[in-house]
Image (cartoon, rainbow, N blue to C red; front, side, top):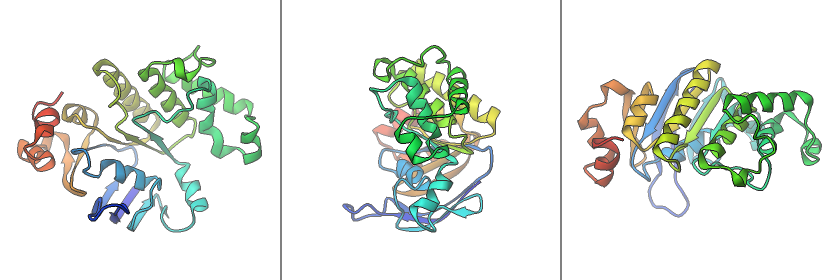
Length: 257
């Protein structure tokens, strides 16, 4: 499903690579969680997979297509298969829930229609179905600004599902939520991806959450992969290798959640 080969990325204002020769393969329907301290490269890696940022070098194959080989327009067709969920929800807050969810159908409609806000009956039906999946039936006409953090993330998930994605990337999807909502959102994502056969890759801070929701754990430190294996194979030595004996090790690694 995803094949990453020798990926390197350096931000213009830095003297060191944010990603250093990353090579990873993800199978169809796989569930994987990326862990590591802030600045380890987790978000950069996810954004490169979706070509939200341009890597300095390397290759990323989605199926048989290299998302980095060719113009943005060609990459856009490949990106349509990839749903992205963000820490800060990335919603249009002064619009209704339904309008935000319908934005997941933009790639299926012409530019002229989307400017006019015209969607098909099929689009509306799919949006309603996905709102029901995330437990927000009846909220269609509510303004996003008035929702709680957990509800906003559910809207973002419903919008992503309207893309009919093969892959969902989630960049710290629960960091802005309280502990109860963190579990609710991760349970929801896990259930949806399992039932729909969607490949799921998330970055998370808390180790206990990572082990609970990722059959595969990928540990990053300073732009490198320092662990890649089953969650049950992760040892305290590996955790120190990922986090170092720092405040984050005690907060996210040693003590868990």
